[in-house]
Image 1 (cartoon, helix red, strand yellow):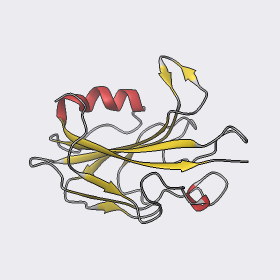
Image 2 (tube, helix red, strand yellow):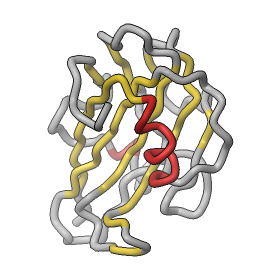
Image 3 (cartoon, helix red, strand yellow):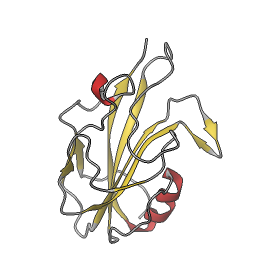
Image 4 (cartoon, helix red, strand yellow):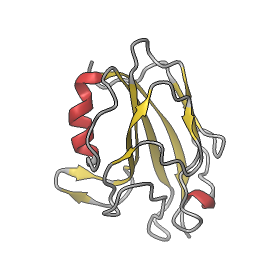
Length: 158
């Protein structure tokens, strides 16, 4: 299936869709990932993946744009969410040069940045190797993607 939005829902108790991401979940705060919840996974889902990407970051490198804040995958389909700061998954590479979550930290006075938390429902088993970059993960999961949706948060530094 080509990438297209589906009816599954992704939410966070930390911020509403289109709302401000609390400082706690940013590089200016505790830099801890927000709790995420999801519902209405497509039938046949066997694993899940999450990516957090900032397309507003003024970066273009290696054919990519923006900044990758989080790549998480091999999440079992039985999960209904991730708790705040959870590491119950396999980590991929981020723009910070390390695995795991790195919260928003846009340049000061660069205006609001939009952080897209993408959830992918996959029909493949959760057995992908650790350390995949966002583009590597997307290449591997595209043929397995049953559905996807996003939650967008906003953060701005002054």
